[in-house]
Length: 424
Image (cartoon, rainbow, N blue to C red; front, side, top):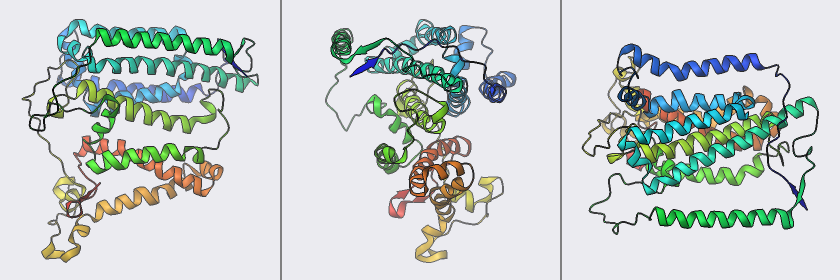
């Protein structure tokens, strides 16, 4: 039994014929990323970044979720997938890493509030997670870029073209033992240098503000902003577990087994990475560094003022539907159904638009996808396997949809049924 060395290949791929369409997508993503900053500067809502304070004000203004997620992280995610053959080159990846480190660690020099948050003992794992995620992504995409270019050229993959085979025993086991010793030493030094922030026993009469879950659950805690607790804390985590269990049944494509590739697994890798990076890593960063007292959102350079009062104006879909003034005049402009007007079924009449939308999203949208954009995927996977995947997919897509609607329309619930303790 043997394994291979893990250093990325330096194979130079031939010219890609699809570069024009990718450049168009890349240009659109760059315009999206620049547009919020340009609009704010043109309107004068933030000072020009000609000084350190101006730079900090601009970053704080652009850090709010509706701008940073929609106009930075999501376009950046698309750029990462579209230009994976370019940014994984060491001559580009290394300067990008240096720029990130200068911004991330250099900000500790110019702002004491930022430094106090980043260096908090509880938050150090997030920094390690960010750097670890970036490095592992680079290694995976670097090798995927080389493999995809080799597949196009009809030559062996990176792992098949290597002659530096090594044995599991003793070569790999020795390396793993060495890594184990280094990791244990690092953990001991870490525990001595940054003592665990053990605090007083939990007191329900005086909870900490903000009360935060362990860092690996902060993504789920962030979902509580957008969904009812039973959905954010029970249903969505349950669907994540169900999705992981169902993955061997859903994904029977043998391509990509034992080697890195993006070209042969575009849909699977894109969906998986979107869930991991955007809906887990980014939300953890938000919950750790940008959610302060009362779970208010603060920019990275803002002081966490525990007395800050942020008005919450949330409107349910039924209120939009029955009150035309709430939806630019497109609603029915009628009073909400009550028991006097519609009898015992009034909650269902009142929430009819949300119920219809939910049925459409969960049960009808997968059928539409099967007949349109996912028609080829439906033929490849077969009916049962495709619809299991499609239902999980639309549930995954509901989270960014709900987030966008919260930001744009201050929408709280699609379906609001407090009579049955059921909100969606």
